[in-house]
Length: 95
Image (cartoon, rainbow, N blue to C red; front, top):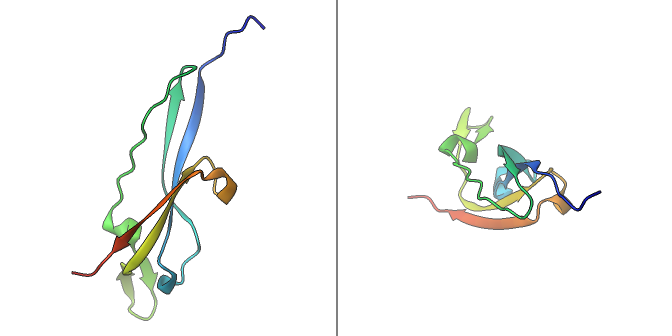
């Protein structure tokens, strides 16, 4: 090798964890974006979430429901928790 490093691609994946009361799986894929970077460079990947992204199908309500409570946010390169280094949360409060 001559010491050069090559550009590389990565797929950033966004997972949401619904509030516990929703009874949904702990993480669900809600978006992804492929980026290609040259060595030593970084970039920002933006994900836009819609109301539908926050919803789950309620069989009892026979409709899509957006639960209140704390949503967990995970970003990384696979669904394995160890590969989701960016983590945070936000609250949804009914109006």
